[in-house]
Length: 278
Image: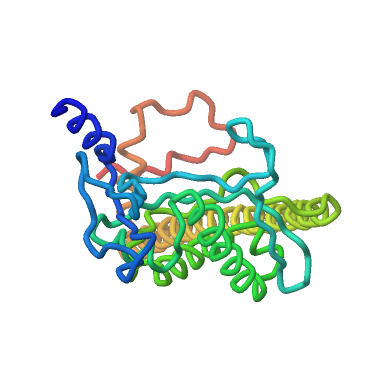
């Protein structure tokens, strides 16, 4: 009898695994509703009119994608429009966790488990935030560097919406590339290519101008150097001429210094050497 009672008691208990909290719900009677106390890991008594819901408290990761995931081929991609009205679709990932002490509050608000909260409520919040924030952005920005700003705004929006009830958003992120009509992608890529080519041409012009300035500077430097050398040589000649004019003996002295002491062997005109030896 005792053994049967023990078996019945264990059968009426529900196990809350590690990494989860349990939320006990009263199904009948005046106390019908959600128990305000979360149940930690372990076994807990669950009566006839009670039911236990499990909420994982570890990080939840999910991707709303176009392709099949884990055998599920439902298209869950998110769509939005730019300021021009162009349709964009994308795969978006989310990471979040639930505060253990806020699990009862979350269940009271949504009356759903974690999977339903992810698939329905969080997905709708992310989609609505994308629609709101992308509607003021041009397609070139969304397709380019602006997509980082866009997803950051979405994460900020969702964090503010659910943080107060105990859902802590860790990250909302793009998965892969954004999908636009091919004609739009081709036009954007062509514009980017033209911009790059124009920039390359500007760089070449700037380089040519820089090279020309270097050549001019080199030529001006060479001319200035030649001018200084010429002025120095002319100044030396002037100094020497002035010295000779003031001292005629310098000519005689220079001639003596260079004379080898020999007289000419022929003297057609009868002239004598110009050196006067005193």
